[in-house]
Length: 339
Image (cartoon, rainbow, N blue to C red; front, side, top):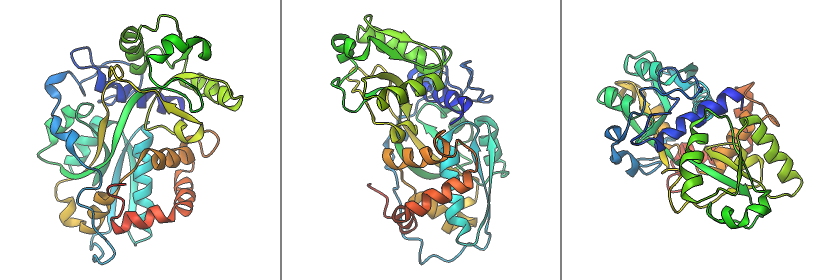
């Protein structure tokens, strides 16, 4: 994952935590990842809790007996800098093209992406963050988009530690800080994750004993690699979904005070008439379900510097699917639901 990708992703996730405050989400019109506020999440009035109630893969069924779509050309919009956008778009492209489709993936910032979807320039997007991050877009365009279901329900900000360390909750860092060098490694100063950690997690858990080391995402990931390679305890600010959970032996600290915010759910949306024009492809989208391990594995292959680093994404997806044939078979047969 590139520096810009990581920063954009974190700024986007943080909008789940900005109720009643200035919005810090970066998944709006600019999607710049620089930490500026935008219109994508302006407060609690935008939250519709019904979006939390989705079950990933609900409505799944076997596509094996379905007739091929007469219209086999599909354009998928992926949000620039958002790894899961390109990961899910890449998976669908890989599977659909093996079934005779022609699939194009085009990068967009979130605002133009939603506008392009309802305008018919894009057939499908797979990265709708709800109930908060993309609430404004859904309010604006929801009656024109086709809801193709959700596929992931654990998108959130975290504080993570190496798996074999002793701390279980964020609060444990108050009494166990010396085991982690009394340091919490963070990312960019302007990131929403940094603000949430500084303004919410640290005061709520009284972590004044920690040196919150604010630097950059690459620096945090480099320290995470260095410490886990050396078998040393480390605490970092992180978020889900992220390839680090597959690349390194890390786990989240429990957050009983909800200082880092609630998890969001990721949805797929089609343009008006998409399911009528592409019933088989639409069903494949409904069948898509990712758990944390599977998604971080795919993203690790595609975006970590140890693998493809965001380059040659089609080749990366092909490699991943060749190593995960059972998952692909279950995607097509609708057996991922409930996993």
